[in-house]
Length: 256
Ligand SMILES: [Zn+2]
Image 1 (tube, rainbow, N blue to C red):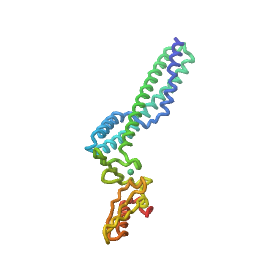
Image 2 (cartoon, rainbow, N blue to C red):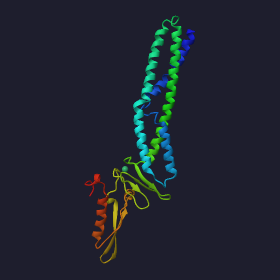
Image 3 (cartoon, protein in one colour):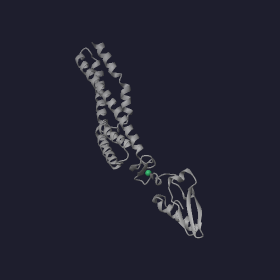
Image 4 (cartoon, protein in one colour):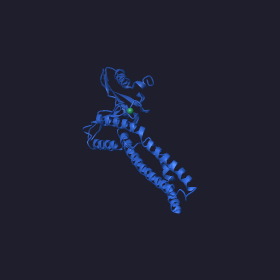
């Protein structure tokens, strides 16, 4: 009987690897948000399939709600659950060690403790599987958030529409579409006025047209409209004024 117990004990003790995995896991990822995450992902999938509606406000509201619930869940589990299980296992380990010193006398108690240890270990295994699933869901959620967030500042998307040519705008101001582009104010490569060649076309003795031509790939991030004027300088200045007007506050004073 004792040998059986010892064998069982060591079998149960073979959980070291599991404990290690659980200890290195990010316990900030929580389980109770899993159901909500699934619902959220379902919503995002629907959005991808039918972008015409562009009910992004709803998406943002759902995401805010998701974040709140995740942070609430973080307060409760699985940190607390895993902590309780690990503590219990530690106590059972010690109990078994003590009882093993006089196994003949403590055979019944040892048997109960080992059984309890095995149950606790199974619970820990179950928790590990749940956490892995929750992590997978969170990774998926992060992926979809990335798809719908500004690549520079993570600002939320505010509008998406268009089938052949997509128009998309974000709450930071970044937008692109068939009618023009506007960069994110936090884009480190926000185009400079020097990135445009201001080409002049003479339409008459006092009629000039200035066309801003992108000198590089970066310049395409900001659409500047051609301008007319009675002199070359006037037409050019109108483009420069437009550029300055569109310049985000945080960049004013840094350029031109
Ligand atoms: Zn942005």
